[in-house]
Every structure is written in structure tokens, then in C-alpha cells.
Amino acid sequence: MDLWTYEREAAARGCLPVCGCDEAGAGPLAGPVYAAAVILPLEEDIPGLNDSKKLTEKKREALFPIIQQRAVCWSVASVSAEEIDRTDILSARMKAMQLAIDGLAQSPAFALIDGNRDHGKQGAITTDHVCIVKGDSLSASIAAASILAKVSRDHYMLEMARQYPEYAFEQHKGYGTKLHYERLRTYGPSPIHRRTFLKNL
Image (cartoon, rainbow, N blue to C red):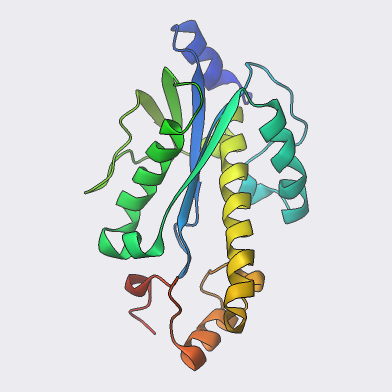
């Protein structure tokens, strides 16, 4: 299976345009969860395109503008830490992905969704779709979305590092590293921390 199999299958059923959608930042202790949706021209060759987790930060940053330039359209959305605390992370992830899909300049006929979940208690994917486990390694559109979501979130966390330098967000991007927990114990949570993720603090 190559990275275009799922897109070709959707095209064969007349489900065009098809978008890929993925999220980033479900696990961190701080910051929003981000999602991106991307419609690529069918069979568009973007060298190095892969699951964002399998790429170096340098490679993701290099691919970020290339995907934006070559995509038919793309969209990035986020759900805040405050809303994650008010609902739950699964609902927030689903909401962010649907917001990203809704933000596309062209409405997709079909969406390829990374993972095995399409709804939470308070959020769901409403666009006609299929869930693909490890989709960011199996679909070009989802891989592109995974990079846009990850890089967009990283950029936000670098902004927060300047706003809240005591937490060293530039080093861990909000994930629960030893350094992050040390800073939390010293300074307590910031306004962008997810309080529901800090129960063990």
C-alpha cells in the first residue's frame, strides 16, 4: 500500500474532494490541542512526506510551507486548555478536527481521519469519513495534516515560552518531561496548563 491508496479509493467512489485530518497535542500538560485538515491534489509528489512523529523537527519545518503551497487548501484549528478541562481531551480532539475540516476553503466530500475514534461525549466528526489507524503513515493527506498540526502547535508553544519563560516550553512543548514537572512544582500551573492533567502533581 502506498500513501495514495485511501485517496484513490475515495476518488473511485466519486468522493472528491477528499481531505486528510489529524491532531497534535493530545498528551501534553499544557496548551491547546491542534488539528489540521488538508486537501492535496491527487498523486501530488511531496518528497519526504510522512507521519510527523517519524520526522525530525527540522524536516517538519521544511515540509510545512511546501504542504501549504501545494495543497488545494488547508486549515488549522485548536481547542484551548480551558475547554479541554471543561469537557475532556477526546471531545476536544474531535472538535478540533471537525473545526479544521469546516475551515477548509473547499468543502470535502469525504474525510480520512487518523485514529480509531470519531466522537467523544461533546465532540464528533460530522463530515462523511473513515477512521484509519496509523493513518498518518498510510495516507498522504493525513500525513500532510499531521505535519501542519504538529508544527502549528509547536509554534504556539514557542510563543508561550516567551510569555512564560519559567516553564521552558521551548524545550518540551508542554509534554510531561522531568524538567516540566520540576518547573511546575516550583512555579505552579500557568494559565495555559490543563488542570485536569495535573492531578498527580
